[in-house]
Image (cartoon, rainbow, N blue to C red; front, side, top):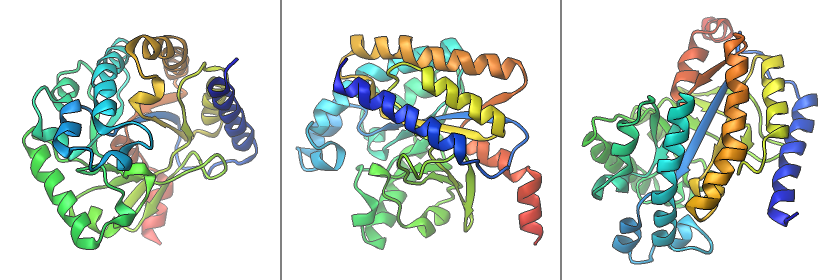
Length: 291
């Protein structure tokens, strides 16, 4: 049993233990499952264009080119799995992907499942290191680039989960973002922050098995809460064969379990944007806005 496997199982168990005693605020009538996927590069051509200058903003050990190659190979496997399960996910793409051919934008848009395309920076630079003008320029470039695909992103996932410049997100029409979390700070809730909504992270997963993840789904159902799972494509492994095994043994069984709950009327599948729309329709939100 390798160290990576043990760390993954321990994380799932720890989250289950914390969530068992840390009841989330009641916001919804039904539980929901949300998955957001952080596509840090998406194509090796981006790494070539950036000539290694941006490598450490993406990964401490791999180059942008290497990460881009891995993600280019793995994202079709994810899309295939989501299509087979009819599961809508939130894919957070960096704006620079609009510059390259054979873009993941097209793959997602042509999928049989209606996924949400969110923004993940333009160059995947850490927003807490950017000045206001630099962050504004990144967001402007994202808007211009994604318009090529008739996309106006409504959700933003910060590179390396470092949250900053929320006022600029409002300026560019974003509605939701994902805040930073840890084992003890993760949760199952949506929180209004100014005019934006934090669809808070519940669990990072690399899908080493699904036993405790299923138990966490049960807790979400018990609490009628939103369960927000997130990961990078390369967290599934650095090769298509390893990733396919994780999808088959971890991701797919978890969603299949959630499908059973959905068929019982106990759970819904949502994206980051759609769960915010659901939250705005909730009685709790309406009461908050009225006070």
